[in-house]
Image (cartoon, rainbow, N blue to C red; front, side, top):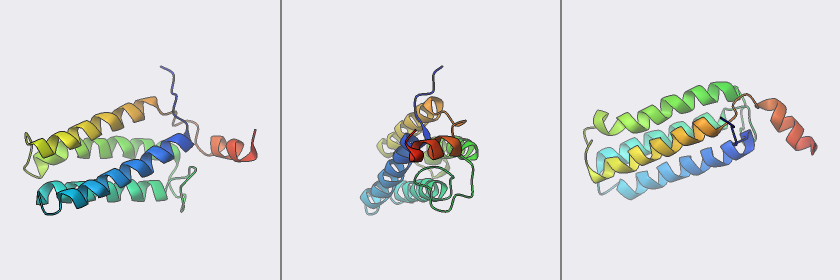
Length: 127
């Protein structure tokens, strides 16, 4: 399978995902406390992972892009299992998390995690 998503594109998707989750947290805040809490937990975890990854858009660059890929899979599992863990599996709110986990799985499967820092350096050099 060809991996079409490069580190820069993946970073953009990560920050968009974090923003989506944080927005869901605000949306559910007064509607569904458990969904709000799960959305905030996912949003903060994606944001922190992105900030600490050694890829374009990373700020602190403490984690390799390959490690990021493993953590993405853990986070997608948390998004998928979170509604059951937080007691609202089977509700309309849960479907949002299941859909997001499915989308994240597609991104993970489409990302070339072997193209970490080398790709970023080549891209910044304009080669």
